[in-house]
Image (cartoon, rainbow, N blue to C red; front, side, top):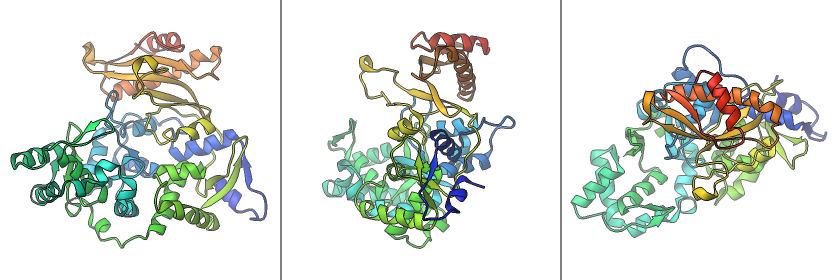
Length: 437
C-alpha cells in the first residue's frame, strides 16, 4: 500500500496528513528511484533504461561535456554502469521511444509526451527567447530555403544547412548574440522550426550536433496520428507526470518540472491542480517544518529507509529545482560553470553525493581522457556538507570512493585521482587508495 492510499482513504473533512521531513525525503527519493542501492548483476538492458526514463518523465540535455553529457548521468546514478548506446538507440533509431522537446529545458521525453507539449509549440512567442521567436520575421528568405533543404535532404545538421545556404548566398549574414552564442541566421531559423515542432531531432552526431528532419520521417505513427490534446488537458497531464516523478512536491516544484510558468499556464495550472486533488491523484499534506502546501501523488511510496548512494549531475531531476533541494534535503547548491574561476566556491562541474537520505558531500569532477593508463576521473575538489561531523567523514569518503570508482569504470577511465582541494580531500584520497587506487 502506498502512503498516498492511506492518506486519501481518510475523511476529506480532516486536516491534511502530516509527514516528517525524513518521510518526505524518502518519498521523494523513492519516486526518483534513488532510495536503494543499485542492484548487482548483469548490466542494465534496454528495458531497464526505458523504464528509468519513463519514471523520470524527462532527461535534461546540456552540451557541457567536462564529465559526460548531462542526459547520460542520471541513468548511471540510478542504474549503475550501462551502455549509453541504449539511450542513443531510444531516440535515434526507429521505433523511437524518446524524442527531443522543449520540456524542462531541452530534454528527451517519452514519445507519448510529445502531444502534451503542443500548446508550447503553438505559443512559441511566449516561450522561446527572442533570437528564435523573431526568426521568421527577421529571416524570411532563410526560412523558405531551410524548409526546402529539410524536405529534400533531411536529416541534416545545422552546420550542413549553414554551408548549403552559404553556397547559395543565403543565410550567412550576421546573427544575433544571445546567451553568449553567435548564431547564424540559418541556425536561428532551424531552432524556430524545432521549437514549433515543424522539424524534430532524428538523433545526434558524435559531435552532439542535432540532426534535423521532418516529423513524419521520425515520430511513430501512433504519435503523429494521435488526436489533438487541448491546452487544459495537456497542462493537467504534465502536472501529473511531474507529480509522479516528484512523489511529493509544492506547486512551485510541479510547475518547474515542465516549465509551466508562462502564458496560458498561469490560468490553467490552478484549475488543473484543483482537479487532480478532487480526483485523488494528488493529496494535500503538511511536511514538518516546511511551508506548504505540499502535494503527495497517490502512487507515492514511503520506504522505511533510504539506503542508496549516487553522484548526481547538476542537471539531475532530483536537484535541478535548487530551492526544493534546499528545503527537503538542507543542501544549498548552485552550479558555478558561469562563475569566474576566482570566485568559485566548490568548483566548475560539481556533483552532489547522495548518501542515504541526505547529500553528504560534493565533488568537482573532470574526465581526463588524455592521461596515461586509460586516463583518469579527476576529483578537482571534495567538500563535506556542513552538517557532516568530522568522525563521519571517513565513512562518507569510503562510500563516495566506491561511487567514483564505478563512475570511472563506466566512463572508461583507468584511475581516480583526488586533488588536494576541499575539506574532504584528505579522507577521500585515503579512501580511494584503500579502494584499490
